[in-house]
Amino acid sequence: MSVIDDILKANEEYARSFKSGNLPSPPSRKLAVVTCMDARLVVSRILGLKEGDVHIIRNAGGIVDDDALRSLIISHYLLGTQEIMLIHHTDCGMMTFKDDELHARLRKETGTATVSPARFYSFSDLEADVRDQVAKLRSHPWIPKSISVRGFIFDVKTGRLREVTAGKTGEVSA
Image (cartoon, rainbow, N blue to C red):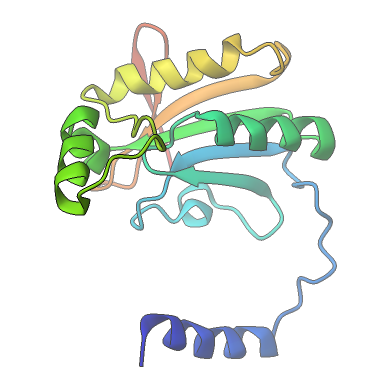
């Protein structure tokens, strides 16, 4: 039996007691979170959330790419979010390679080159990348200046969030 088959069995159990079918589409906390796809990040537990509280946008590295921007713009203009929280994490796999090296490896292993994805958005400095992603959001013309945009690093060993600001960091209890 495959993992997907196991998950479908678990879904049958979940559906038997499902009671959240009437939740509204807009997130009740008016917050959108951009974070990494890393399986160790269970965002609802890290942030003390329940179903319907926030929009969660995930990708490798928690990168503000075109798709994340698209989702955030829809989240704000069509569904009312008023704050954006960016969360990177320690021990991130995006820090273990360079884009050009991965492209070369993929060309060699598959025997073909491709134009997409053009970038994988690897990075070597966790705090600098958080700052870069926050800056992308704050400078985008379709993200209103009234939207609060804040960046954090989740420590996978302690479970704590640490806020990353322009010049310093400060711990925030998770």
